[in-house]
Image 1: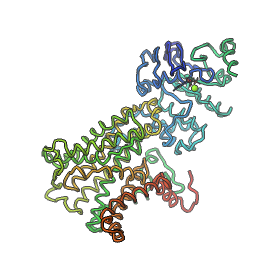
Image 2: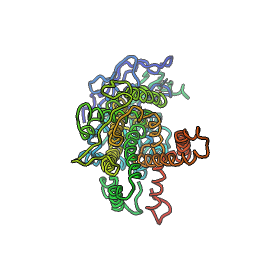
Image 3: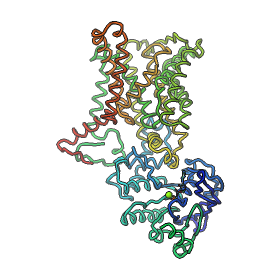
Image 4: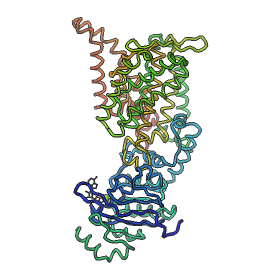
Length: 258
Length: 355
Ligand SMILES: Nc1ncnc2c1ncn2[C@@H]1O[C@H](COP(=O)(O)OP(=O)(O)O)[C@@H](O)[C@H]1O
Ligand SMILES: [Mg+2]
């Protein structure tokens, strides 16, 4: 694992607005190699937008995003993914017509190399590659405890299971940094703790850097190394969970929400 | 994906295989042997109908990959088949290549033409893309008619010799069958392989959630164009088969109505399923033959001035009704019914299929 203080992802003075809505107003953020960074803030604070800018799904009107020393501000989404940035979505964005297994296999798209001709011929190269990647995916399915539904189409699964598949698809990509947008939203305590355990395990086993958006402050305190707080498109605080808990600005923002 | 009760896969290779039990292998081999002797069993008229089915199966695989898997609707498929046919004719007549070189090159040319007409898909979806591909149908068929008549043949088209191997001509249906059916079987194999591996999954990803696909590293631009290329490559092979069957190319034999029928084929068979394309093509061609038989009989009930048009009119009505019935009662197509049936047979004597 690289040194704890290397900056892996750096967001500099990012501005994003939709007509009159100012979603991000000059947000800067540094994510260090191997850390778990939580992004918290009230609804509509701009948290999802921030991830969308990193992914290249939204284009910032001003500012820049640098990943491992490379400027990715203007790169297209699939190129950014190819650099090793994985992502889950707040509103589920799975391939509804594919089975759980194939959703995860599709997640490994970038790691596979089979081209058109090899795909059509199948036997030989493509077959060998499929088996190789299938092994990795089966490992993930075991890890996420979704063996029972591996062959079901994701359209037919419960919300909680779909959230797991979404996480699985992002993990299948073997990202160097994982951006998780409210992976535990809408879950009960037990389900949340399962997801938290998966995140911590992946972090430990693979050393993946993790940026997680989460509302549950209790959980954030448990898993995050650092916390960043957004409100109205601006960063209002940053620090260790203990510092954030007692920050007057943060308390004001969160109480103002209630 | 159901097998006899109690059957378990022992490794990933087996679990990924298309055919996973000895029974399935026996069935496939029996079916291939049956295909091999079809011309010995059936009359030339029936073999002729089966030849046309083989062409439609290949065409349907193409549209199924493009529309069923990748979700890019095309109402210009017949015209792309025309591009394959015209490419074949020009390669043979104007460049002096033989049929086998044409089989290699014409589909690639068709795929490239398809990619050009697929460019709007990068901006348009659904209804608007449908309109753009409809435009492709008209542009291409107009080009067959007016572009470079010295090379392409204008309104009368081009007459192309039938293929030959060592003095054996593929002119009669019984012989032609041995050219068209193996081609259809091979293309089915290719279509299934594409569908079940990396490329096919990327197509479905683009269909089901294009935004997520891009963020997960699947280039939308690249894979939409690949879908058009592959879909039209199959159309190109079907076009080559048409030339072998028709012995000519003409601007009016790849009409809009066929493009619409092809959409009907994949709806009826079941979108996004290789078996579906086969079922659909067989079903639709049988329907077509029934209309041909039925319309003169029905015609006797109508005054002669109506009876003459009954054939084409009845075809349209039957098409509309059948596609509507499928959309209402079995939107997943014949394949779905087939899967259920298969499950019932295999899990016998259990009533409920496990997993
Ligand atoms: N595509 C969009 N079009 C218009 N407004 C948007 C869009 N996406 C987000 N917004 C607005 O930007 C603000 C921040 O949204 P978001 O980042 O989703 O908040 P959250 O912190 O809850 O994830 C909200 O006011 C939201 O309505
Ligand atoms: Mg959000």
